[in-house]
Image (spheres, rainbow, N blue to C red):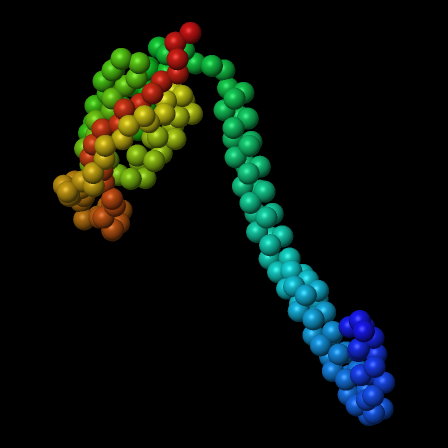
Length: 178
C-alpha cells in the first residue's frame, strides 16, 4: 500500500468533526507558511523601499557631482611642469604665508610649514590641485604644539576658539613634462 492510499484510508476512518479539525489545522499551517515565505518578506521590502530609494537618490546625486567635477578637471587644458611649478610656488606664498617654505625637488616639490591652520591647509591643497595640478605624494604632518600668535583683544581672532594647526612637510607631485 502506497503512502497516499494509507492517508486516504485513515481519512476515511475519521469522523466528520475530526476531518473538519484536521482540515482547519492544515489550512492554518498553509497560511502561516504563506505568510512567512511570501508575504512578510515582501511587506518588509515594500516598507523599506522609500528610505532605500531616498538613500540611493542621495548617492546618485553625489556620484553625479563627482562626475561633473572629474569632467571639469579633464576639460581644463594640460599644464606643463614649469607652469605648474610656478603656480604651486605662488600658491604657497599666497595661501600658506611666511611660515611655509617651497623647494623644488626632482620631479616634484617639497613644502615645509609651521603652524598652518587646518582650514587654510585644506583650502591650499584644493587650490594646488586645481591651479597647479599638483597632488600630495607624501605628507608628514604633526599637530603643532606652538600657540598661535596672540591677537589684540579687540579683534575677531581673539574671540575665536583655538584652531588646529599643523607642522610638517608635503611632497607634491606635478604633471609629467611634455
